[in-house]
Length: 333
Image (cartoon, rainbow, N blue to C red; front, side, top):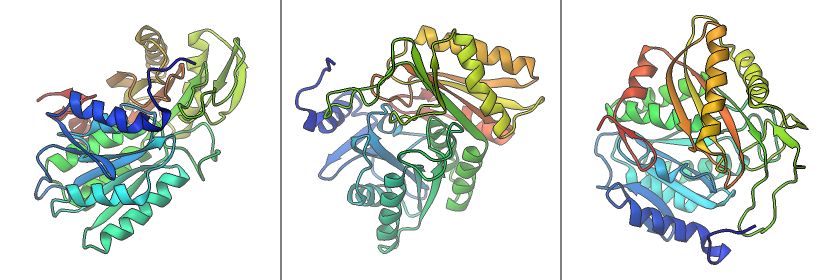
């Protein structure tokens, strides 16, 4: 597998330096330990949002640091949780006196390390809350999790909770809104190909040329089933069925439909997926009132996509529409 890298050991550091060079108007990057913060220092009187996890899912999370979303992101090694030290450092760097919310994807390493970091920050009189993201309906437990995995719904939580914090809601309110978004979000993905972790140099799993994995995780964890390749519409139906049944979503609901690319799938195919998903939802009386399409939570160069549905109400819609200015998501400002 050919990659545009130098030394595999330096991938995360060099990528962070690229983020700093490209988006210095939005973020500052610290390297010992490594974390990314919003420019201008902590915003006094505002709840700060901190997220992070293994690298390889770009633009998650560093691409979502900025006005209206995260105050800090902590990148770990590829597909490996950051240790507590940089999480603590990021938490202290962005604390503006109103408390800090940790947004944590439900992977065992992330949960444990963010818990430890929260305890250490609390010992320094910083009030920290956590919301665990577990939007994936594909499997209950995986190689990396107890319970459901946190996947593309993370972006929706970061955006909506970020807007809540930006309007100066208190820590209880921001936490409750983040939890509500998680509770009303469901996701499921499909992989057409594996990905190659830089330091491994070989595919993380194998798929025959005519096979796909339904319900894949963003680290290449197994999904629900491995089947022969089908037309796009049939694949979308396989993903949407479990999503709709799980909440459940029903006729009359208003939703945000998010089609996310896994890194190696062209935009034209993501729009084919979105088209079919919107068609099915319309047939079921579910109204798509907001949308997002693109590569936002990736798995290196994996070919594939995920579908995410968030059940909206007036407040969540207003917070989604609120201005945001980050490297990967920006509107209204």
